[in-house]
Image 1 (cartoon, rainbow, N blue to C red):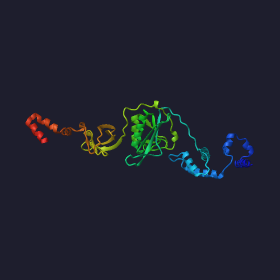
Image 2 (image 1 turned 135 degrees about the vertical axis):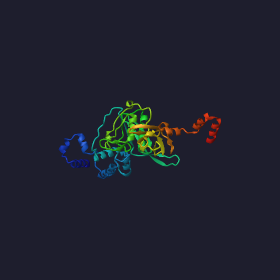
Image 3 (image 1 turned 120 degrees about the vertical axis):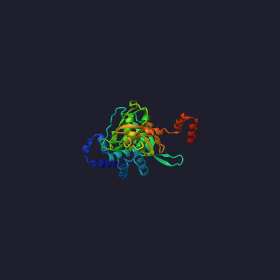
Image 4 (image 1 turned 90 degrees about the vertical axis):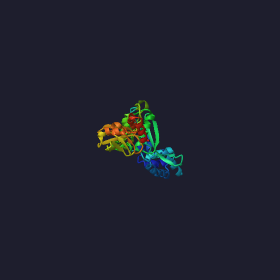
Length: 345
């Protein structure tokens, strides 16, 4: 009798007549009525109240239903099973929009992003826990994945991680999908983001394109495979920085991070230039033409000089060294040479 009464209450609550209910198929009836034969209102209300907190945490980094179910298990006197927990949640918060599986040609894309949650490493000497970012790159067709911990999400860290990923995968895709990372773009856009200059240089070096997804549409991401990747270039990419500088009267441009000076041809004295520099070399451009190339010297206050850049007078003086004066003295006899050596000693 209690069971019959329970079903009668469920039928009445459905707002359908018995005749209408008889015309429903099994799937429709399962959707309309819970699989349970009885309704424990207090137990159900407890779960619904708990779901409010679960739903608020849904978009937080590291969210999992299992974690929240385990918390629910610890505080409920009569918890639902995990399967029932998920069913009730999906019934209370149905999906508002679906997503489409995108098909992609193998070898087209590599997806990159930073994990939402940081990891920690331990300093061996001090025992201090140090938070690190987690960079992830994936070739989705094969789910081949590269993961690297780094200090920050800054531009130089991002580009170094991307280069390491390409060398790990052993090839280059047609495009790198960056998901509008702040260190990859100057300005995010709903339609087309503005890629920063360093990332464009990276793409030119590896002969690929940077293609950020729309900032709020992660469903854009999808698939590639290693055998379709392009070959890597002969050299690894070096991060470039840029500075504008006026050529000084002595014929040098100044790079402030190193507090060092690099020569340019003397005819450009007083001209405005654009300096491109990496960890290993310095290039100086005027009107988009390269006018000087040097190996970078990180010693503070250095003057790095290419003698071909000097005017004839300065070039003559630049040759003044002990050996120069000894060579000049030698044709005038042994005594003159000895005198010059004593002066230089």
